[in-house]
Image (cartoon, rainbow, N blue to C red):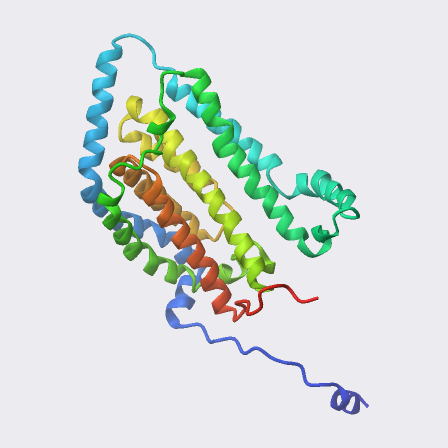
Length: 319
């Protein structure tokens, strides 16, 4: 009887998983994976120092000059910056996610839907939740710290927080160099099992091209806000008091916002924070770092979809 039932059932499609390579098997072993970042960071440290040593020395000289001009007067910028950073990141952690969307925003959208049927809340529910996530990042990274800073320190120019474009094209070659270093590392990380299941954040990106492009637009906007906050606001606030140490201070919260992401990527954020911060201080703008960031982020999404054979082929979602 079981054999008759089994023969009557339609054959189910099967996806054959590729056999992991010897290298992938070794890297998946927990003690090895946990320790891999240590020698990698040790090897990269001299290269990063050699490339940015002049930038770091210039920052230290600028900080020493600032301290001499202040004499015994206190500079409250580092304390104000650190408090603002702590408050912003805490607000985002507790109120910038799904719980606020589920409890407040989704019911509001449901009330609007009868008069605005194009909202289609059931279809785009996940996209709307990420719209709130992106908006909360832009609000926290830009519209809280910058106006507050101008209120506290009215003589400081916000343009000095990485928003000047002068000299950008003269340093565009660094953008290509950073990608030449980062993209091979990204391909290595992409071979880990947790990579394909983690990206893109918006899982319906594979449903249609419109879903994918709307998601990437939100994703890119929050990356600009992120660069402005970490490489613009924090470094602009700390560099005169701390010199090159401001870059390493910024890299700590920047690494911590990656907690919950794949392990190797989170360790990569340590290097990325230092390199992008040094790049911002070298060019005195956030634009090159922003280009590096979105190029890598978009590539990771597209690579994850491609590896799952899930890249969308229709413009609008069916139905």
